[in-house]
Length: 337
Ligand code: TXA
Ligand code: MG
Image (tube, rainbow, N blue to C red; front, side):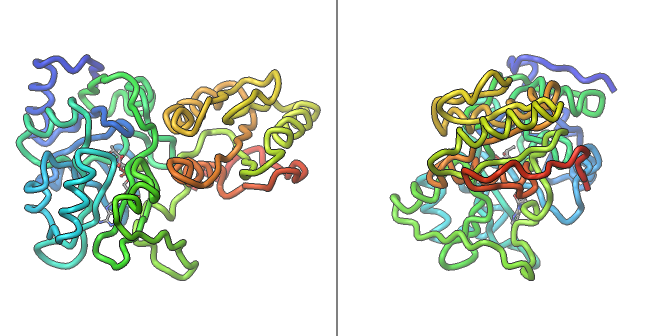
């Protein structure tokens, strides 16, 4: 299949709407990351999303809607869910609602991006859309990232330039009390609390069935191993010492951090957390092509920093060490299961 990568002109958006209505897939920008859209009313189209991504069958898709009333057609919008949607939609907050029919839940969000909103309107139906990457890989924050991974598999990618937040939406379970963050994202716990929403972030017990199945898989992972230094004083010095050791051992280090450069290594040094969120996945993709090991400095776990820390933890398969820790053994090949 030839994949067209086009600007979201009126004509391209109309074509995209028609493709979606006829059961095809379209990648499109949102304010978080690029999504791989399919009609949420078409089981065949959604099956195609799983096939193209190589996604596990037990990991459900987020449904994108244009309004609260469209969400209400899919799941039961409780009083608190309505209050959350009124405050944070359109925006990077996904609400897990009880389904009207049958057992179980449905995750819905209303994206804050003109292309995404126009597409939902032109398709005239809710759009199921996971991030437009192969399962396990970093999420795409540029149309080119989608092309590199899904080119040849889908007919159309709408190029809306770089996405804003760079990390995915916050997934909030509103079926439990207190509300529970299943995936930290663009809307922070602090912001929810400030607006009067009492939330908990309970880490999963090992025996607990993940409520957000996506959280149990290795994720967001570059093709070279990644190791992280936790927040706290002396972090960048630790990264520097590790990078020198890696270099001495004949491997090429790369660095992702906030603040000052760790040394002459390739990488991305961001001025603050917001910039790091925006550039994190792109930096992983850039570095995997030119280094053997990626070293990352974790931001403090507050605000958007929690979402970054969550993505780094998964990308590094949990290899996070405190500042001052000696360089750990780093595998050469990665278990990509
Ligand atoms: O920002 C985003 O949310 C992006 C853009 C494209 O909208 N989408 C996205 O989708 O990140 P995906 O499929 O990559 O991640 C969806 C997450 C997964 O962790 C999945 O397990 C969880 O949401 N999820 C989906 N439906 C759920 C449900 N009913 N209950 C709990 N978790 C759910
Ligand atoms: Mg994803």
